[in-house]
Image (cartoon, rainbow, N blue to C red; front, side, top):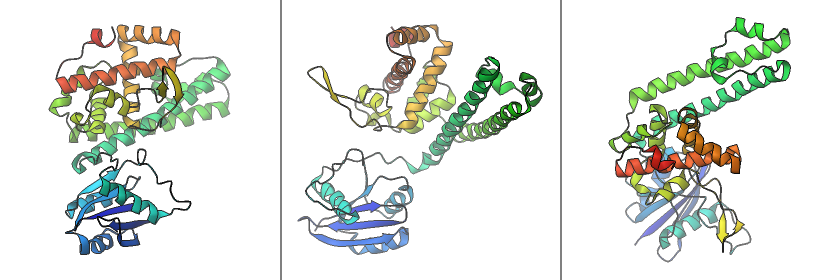
Length: 338
């Protein structure tokens, strides 16, 4: 007899439901988030369980890894794509877990990618870097705004990062405003130190796989962004077409069209927000250092706005990374930004 298991995972408990081939509930219980207890409960049915469907939440690592290590086939549910059952007026966690097991039995359960455990820690380390970079940018903008508001001075990000306390005190003759500037500078220095430590650790532990080495030829992408893109993408062959990859990178519009007319929008959060950030970063670097990319951006900006234009550059770079990785060719800026 084949059995199908669905687990609705929460922060402190998991609702486990097991169905047979006739959709009959064989087991149903709420358990504490303790791997030993969950494995103990499932062990009675282990030989019959075809697969375990786990709702993809923020805290799935321990459960997915534990079940896979114990020999179970695990399916990570794509919660953004799974359809909820509308036939009931009232539903709870048990109904949700039962629905996951039901979709698993029918073979129509939308699943996500279970990233290899071996590289997950370095990937998450670079995710922490992206968070710190955003926080650093926020403090740089804050300092620039203070100066512009009070003195009409304009300082580049590069010059802001090079400021010391003595220079900050000379920028404006007001102790309160100077203290605000120095507070921003202290945070920026602290963040930059942490960012440097993370970059050094990541470069020491990880190297670009063969299929990703040529993305360093793509304008705007260096070693750290290259590692970020590789670790967030996983196996490039899981994307059948370039459009699938650029969509996963959140570089395309989220809209529904019919007969050439917009009929609504799909879920904007579908895809990988870290890849979206990485390609926006790459776009900003590319526009700064490559005249052809900058020209493309300016033409696009004249017809739309700076945000859409930057996103268009990011989309071009994402598509380029897919092709150079998939086809093992060197990036050609003339083809990408003709």
